[in-house]
Length: 167
Image (tube, rainbow, N blue to C red; front, side, top):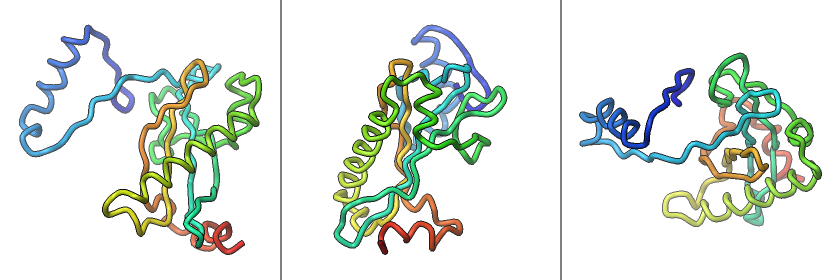
């Protein structure tokens, strides 16, 4: 899958297709190929969880927000910049059919806190005070870490994102 396009084939065909498409760039760029995780919700839309984290003065981590991100229309991705809709995390897990939606929220929060704490210990990331942690949720409601973005909220929400740290 790439953006709104999909293709099916064997693993060998997929590898050959990717190598053919990026052969020239492979000499000067690093690529990560990951397993496809089916994140479709009960309505058939791709959906993920986003934890926007802020660092507290005591070096712990709190949430600015934890949301479900649901793809709109026929898009294959749930990235907010590509046009997804945001819903509160508990409603997201209810819509996914979770038996214990509050427990899934706590699990996502714990995983996101642990991820942010681990990331800020890495070289060059010690001064980070924000992370956006993206989690895929598969059909069995298991979490899969997708990516972390430093300073994801840097576009205008200064007061709101400082509230957890100030309180």
